[in-house]
Image (cartoon, rainbow, N blue to C red; front, side, top):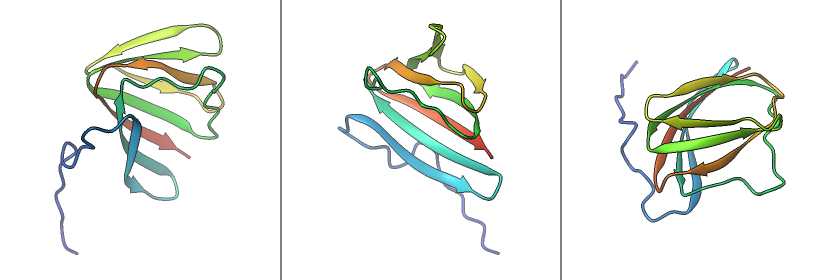
Length: 106
């Protein structure tokens, strides 16, 4: 086996708008992605309704997640939370560059 070290902050999308996701790892039970958001918000009537549990952390920048219950959660660098499967949520807003790490557990 060849060990390959990569850097989470390498090859960040420059000048992009919206969100850009890069899958870092996936197997039968887990998927790990880096998400880079640039002043992003989900479309007004859009809700994520995922079949998997999700754990997410803000590594750089800030964001606000809105839940269908009406709750808005503000997140800054180092903040993380777990979102149970089928809990409807959306990105209310992000800073000019927000870097997330998202772990989906199947």
